Image (tube, rainbow, N blue to C red; front, side, top):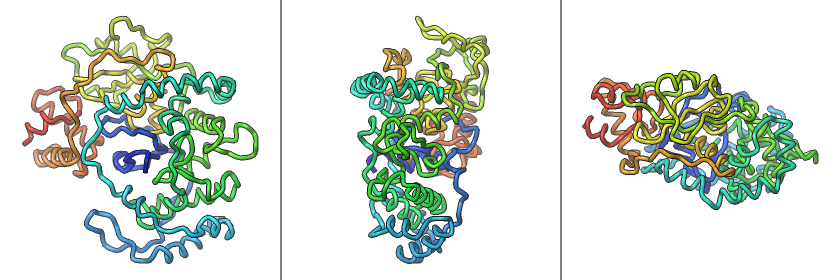
Length: 442
């Protein structure tokens, strides 16, 4: 949870896009795809009551980050009292914070703003690499008995679980090597969302107090995401399970615990066993691209009645006619189109990026020899840079299309403004930011 992502990837971009930190961090993260809206808050954001940051903040710095007016040692002393009040034992806190210092690399990662976005087709090439597919196929066989029991208990398909495992940590190989306590302490002291980081830090201390892991072994990403499927601490507390019955919820070293914990989360997010995530479709001439919006959900049969069709040689998954679906155009009207169903939305609740969810979905199919697309990506139209996205938002608002705060994040407000501008220019109103649109606004 969502949300985790520094070796793993530029989490800051995804956090800003959601205005919520994502549940989990993946080994490769998308930066250029459209997203579908969540229907409820991320579970990780509900588990711990938000505590007002104890740091007294000075005015904003040049890069828009508030600067603490107290030392890290002073902050730690104040936070210790807060943690003890929340039920953390003094010995647990003191051991966890022994020799903990500010981590400058975490501050740098938190403040980073990549200028260029990775095209979704490049992202998917990495997400569904032949090496990852082969490794996943081998693990499906190796863990067949465990996955059978997980499926029986949680009703989540094994291919999806192994795909998440591969996307998040390359099947446990890349989990992050930073102290979770140090990273979260740094973010609570000098991060963009100190209150959220403090909640995660309290949750991390609760994990230590429960005896699931020791401070020295509690390692993860710079943002505090942990384990083989990259849970943030609050989500760990609410969804991690001890599947092998050894008395510890070990998502770091025990693949069964990690996979079962992921299944528990996906089940709570509405996963339906045996249902497809969605499928590729083709759109008719003159299609109303305003319908390519995550809030526009219709039954598969209704979409087909509107002229949406399947590529040659494809068939609708059995029993899907009456399932509710949204139309996804991750690269605009010129790229592949998909009808995405409830299981796709469940993946989005794990990580609210349609590129990520598409990567998990296609990878899960690729394990069985499927997951190949017939539509072509518009590789001649690279994503706008961050500077260009900010300029686009500024120009849209100046011309009467309210794009919200010009932050370089293409969120719901910006997409709505883009659609309005596209419609006014008789362009396909798919909400996708292009150089052509930017040039026309200039």
